[in-house]
Amino acid sequence: MTREIVAVDLFAGAGGFSEGLSQACEDLGYDLYEAAINHWEPAIETHEANHPDAHQYHSKVEQLHPPEVVRRLTGQDTPDVDLLVGGPECTHFSRARGGKPVSEQKRMSPWHILDWLEKLDVDAFVIENVPEIQDWGPVDDDGQPVRDGSIFDAWVNALNQLGYAVDWTQLVAADYGDPTTRERFFIIGRQAGSVTFPGPTHSEVDDELPNHRTAAEIIDWSDLGGSIWTRDLDDGRMTPPKNSTMRRIAEGLRRHCGDAIGPFANVLETLGRDEIRRLREERIVPQRHAAAVADAVDEPFLVPAASRATVAPWILKHKKNSPSQDVTTPLHTVHANGNHFALGTASTHLLRQQDGAHPIDVQDTAVPTIATRGGHAIATTETLLMPKNGRNRGLHSNGLYRPDDRPAHTITADPRAKLVTPVVQPFVDDYEGPAKAVSQPLGTVTSRDRFALVVPELWPWGLDVRYRMLQPRELKRAQGFPADYEIVGTKTDRTSQIGNAVPVNLAKSLCKHVLTATDPSLATYGGGLGEDPEAEIPTYEEVAGDD
Image (cartoon, rainbow, N blue to C red; front, side, top):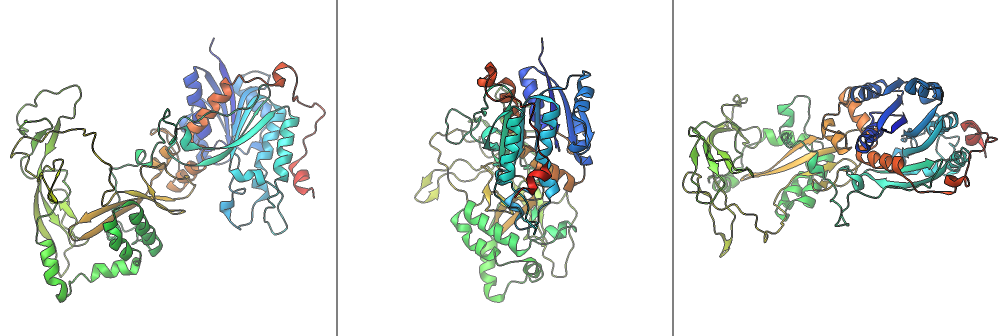
């Protein structure tokens, strides 16, 4: 007979806990019956869109009668619950709030959980918050928290009085398969059995586990963002980057790109919005530099391939001694391992004046505004192959060649290849810390825009940097939500829901562990902690007001 799980998700938000619980039950073959409560309408709409079989309540948790919620969910009079999960308000515990006054009403949200546990028969619970909740104390007359942990101790004592063995720890989401380093406090309580926590599923030090997932996995690489020099020209809603952004970009270039980029970074960190606008307007090369500039740019150079060709394309075959093939002929044998064919093209580009002559396909884009100084130029590009190079007296041994000149060189997976730092490579700008490599997990996703994708590009005449904020579709994946998980609301609403969510894979590991735990305790054999029928749980006001 299939096991049925009755669960309640308090402070459900976008449903990170609910999604993790749902995936855990699916893996275990359990049927899930869940009620979810949240006071914010966009969050409830998100939960309804992704968990249509759950019972959603647009309400504050303290305004509901817990037994009635469970009776409606199960159709039974006995309010038995297998698992209660929740992530109560955390911002008024976090030190990231700084010296801002805190709301006593919002700080009491974990206390409301006691009412649900007291009025329901809950086998186990998992509660999430910031690590600073362990310092939970009263608020002084100036609205500042007293971080003495006295209310936290009273809260844990009340959980014990209700018959729960409890334990808590801090877990990092990256260790459980979410591509974010978000660290959170978790407290687990069980009526029977001892409390344990799941072991990591991913690691950077344990060779038997998969490595941490990276930010590169969740980034939409089809959108690299606009140039820092012209993004306001391309999108009127934007402005040139301010100096603080340019300084972060410069530091990221130093950390994640080659040493040759250092001089560019030194210049970038001195620029702001006014300087960028002035650079665009004052494009005339001083006479004393004219000869050097002419020599530097009067050479062939590489440009990005366009999406459409203006001359006949061809098929390039990645196989030794195989000549290229016209696209008007049938494709040769396709093998099971695939990846033998690529499309080669040549295109005509317009080198426009507004963004350092960034090439655009003449068939895809209209001619940009022509200023009185002119500056547009036409360049015809052709596809070239760049083979794996050896070294010969300081020179590359294998030059570029046209794909229709000769068969492609052998494509190998050379085990002797060495990892080197490229001259430029993308990285993630963090508004709250140092820039991070895309080969690392993303930092903690917050309820406000925090991360941006930075893509440096080298041209023969200088450095361009493409820059954009990470979007909700990417942030939700960093939090472990599936790509098709629908987050409802404005961009601000969606970002807030994602930032407040419990990382899904971490929630899944916790729920699966608690639902299948068999570790015995004294309570398993009728001893140990038991609910005290005479216990009276004090009100929050009584605890917070004690001296």
